[in-house]
Length: 139
Image 1 (cartoon, helix red, strand yellow):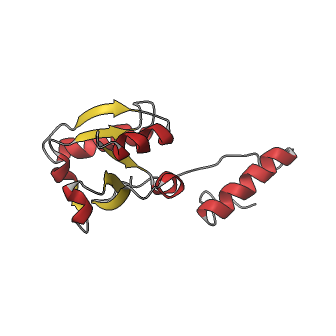
Image 2: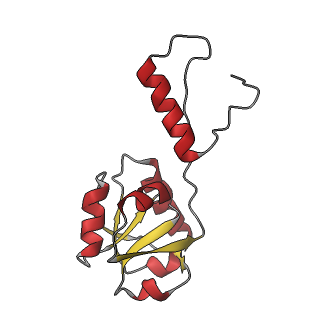
Image 3: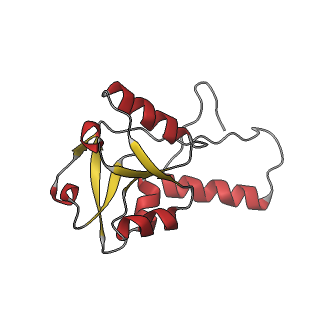
C-alpha cells in the first residue's frame, strides 16, 4: 500500500503525506485478511504501538472507493487499484513508511503456454513494467 484514499473533505486531503501512526483512530477499509497486504499493514501498525480500527474489509475495489466517497472511511489500497478507480471526490495521500506491494509470476520455463496465458503475461508486463526474473533464472 503506497497511499491512503480519502474524501476531499478529510483533513488528510491537505497533507503531503500521512505517517502510519496518524491512522490511529481513523475508520479504515482495507483488503480482507486473505490478502498479504492486510497482515503486513496490521503488523506495521503494531510496530507503531497501536491496533488500527478496520471497520471494513473488502476485495472489491469499487465498493472501497464508494465507501470513501460517502465519507464512511479511508481506504488503504495498492497504487494500481487507486489509479484505475479514482474519481473527483477522492484524493490520494502517500503513506510513510511505504508498505511495499510486490507481484510475482511463476510459469514454466520450457512448457506450453496457451495463447490466453501468454497474452495475460504480456499485459501484466506492460502494465507493471518489466518484471524481474528470479535470481539465476533466464527466459
